[in-house]
Amino acid sequence: MTHPREDVESVLVLARQGLNGCEIARVTRIPRGTVRDWISGRIPRPATGAPAEPCPGCALHEELVDRDFAAYSYLLGLYLGDGCISAGRRGVFRLRVTLDRSYPGIVEECLEAMRRIVPSGRASVYSRPTDRVDEVSAFSKHWPCLIPQHGPGRKHERDIELKEWQREVLDGHPWRFLRGLVHSDGSRFTNVIRHPNRVYRYPRYNFTNHSDDIRDLFCEYCDKVGVRWRQMNRWNISVARCESVARMDRFVGPKV
Image (cartoon, rainbow, N blue to C red; front, side, top):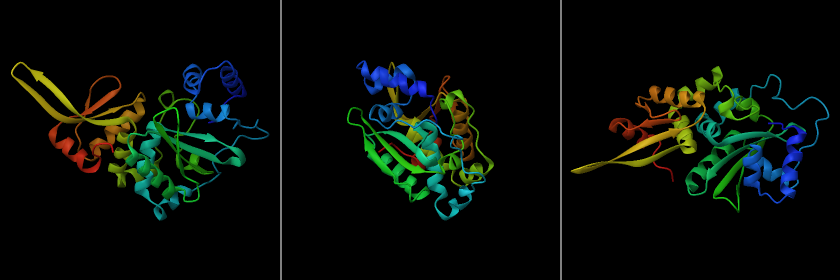
């Protein structure tokens, strides 16, 4: 997204006062990756004309069949959890997905998905030296066309709706979409229930997101694949029934 010039100035002022990138991101509510770019000197130029927009009439998504629908479904799930798109020079956009470094398998799977969707997009992994996260990114003029959920502000503060063509893609690969959602904002763990005479342990999945729309998408696609879920509280969806956990284990599994 394009930030006002005042945001850039605020970040640079806080940096000169000695705050680090994480502290500045918390204060300004600007993504840490964007803050780091500005502090390191990668400051966006003032707009000299119309703002960068998706290519008029772009139908790149219609060519995905020649690339990989499954990769797109997975990448969209990751984006809805941990991704952002920022505008660069000459109408080029950068998709970034921030992932926990403890799961190198997910980082590699994300990188491969980006390479399949935009083969010439210079996909790469950047390991932040001060955080335990890896940032997977790729450049393309078409990211806003491919991921129209991109927009100003945080995802849970705006509407997230799928385009008709996206639903057609996801309906053909619902498990890949769920896998991306779980790899970004979900977990698989062992739940422990203690009774006076016995301790019960069983695996379960949990999905957490502050966006009502994104949680609804998780639940919708669980319904499509026959996974039973339950609303635990305002932000959390639980999958705990044995047969549903078994189905999730087959197509998603623990994070690696």
